[in-house]
Amino acid sequence: MAQPTPAHHYKFDITMTCSGCSGAVERVLKKTDGLASYTVDLEKQVADVYTEDVPFETVLEKIKKTGKTVRGAQKDVDYHELGFEAGIKALLDAQINYDDVETGIACYCYGDSTCGQRVFYEFGMTSIPIYNVNNNCSTGSTGLHMARNMVSHGVADCVMVVGFEKMFSGSLQSFFQDRSNPTQKSGDMMKETRGVTNAPGAAQMFGNAGREYMEKYGAEASDFAEIARVNHAHSANNPYSQFRDVYTLDEILASPTIHAPLTKLQCCPTSDGGASAILVSESFLTSHPHLRPQAIQIAGQHLATDPPALFDRSAISLVGYHMTQSAARAAMAEANVHPNDITLCELHDCFSANEMVVLDALGLCDPGKAHEMVRRGDISFGGRCVVNPSGGLISKGHPLGATGLAQCAELVWQLRGWANNRLVPGAQVALQHNLGLGGAAVVTVYRRADGGVNEAVEDEEVKRRSGVGYNPATEAKGFTREQVGRVRSRGMGSGWALGDTVERVVARF
Image (cartoon, rainbow, N blue to C red):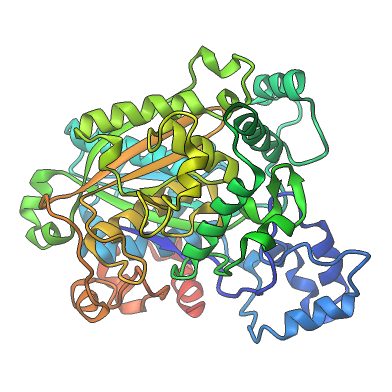
């Protein structure tokens, strides 16, 4: 049902960079004649390893030893290509044609109005309604929520959601300097209660929440580092992770401090990417019986915004604790599940401190006991609930418009049994949490349509069932021109709208 796009086709195995920490990388690459044209894009891939204390030659040699080949600058991959790739894979997965889609929803933060039409017109110009959604870091899940409402209220039987993001390197920034920032009031509260530093604003806000959790409940810096260690360990088996390196707890603690207790390896990197999901009604499922064996039900879902408690002078409240708690309770009530029923979860770990706070807000632990859950090993395989088996945002990256849909893809693959190299066995339901400051929190509960539990499906069997011709959960591969022709609109396609997108996307594989 949903397919995240592997936005990066090359990776340098050094150390990840967090938002706002890429300036020194620019100095490294500008000194390298052969890599000069890739400066902007490799800032998203390579860590800030070059300092006055590390000889440039050492850094350059480390890059060379990776044995990776740069297959083209990421700046040459435009947003509509990311959306096209994700959308084509979703259509192939569902084994339907774009002519079956009755409504399109495009999710992105960084782009001009109607970027969604630019993406969807490449699938076909069928005159369907197309909505453009921007809801900060929860944009993808907001689009998912809109699609579900449309289907559940009979507005459409088949809705396609595509999330994509082409981001600037460095920390998140506001582009409009002649008007108030929508999160200004939160920033003012942070300044009044905790002060400000020269660290990126988001790192300060979430780092302060981590500090408060330490002050109130006894968490330690090592607990936050352990969250990051687990997420990095999980990422090794996810082909879509931007970084698949595994680190020890000591390595994470020793990485540069961004805003204590957060170190660099506890912060999600800036990323480009795309993801897509297709939601259908029960009647559509009945008329397309081939979909039923792989269909996953959205059993409960809720989008919440902030209550007045946002400004109660608590750093934990300031990062959306209350709207997460509200959304979780409503979604689980609709699905008739209890937090104790949740053994599989993808949550919004933009920083390790947020994962700590969210474990508490979701009810996956007793209030104030998230750090104890972490210490017991209850957020990984063999524990109480496997959190972020994908590696989370800390490893996958965080292309804002695509993140919520990529979480959806992981949980769909888990419940189908397709994520066989990182499967959380015996899962009947799965929980998704996606949060954006400003604010909006979306919590979704997924359930297997047959009411059963997941079991591992071997790659060869998935290859037989899947419309893409391989197991998309374990292989980040592409598609052929013939496959594109199979799912694009049969009668309402425009060669002018499509241009050379197919050639450009296929060439990257």
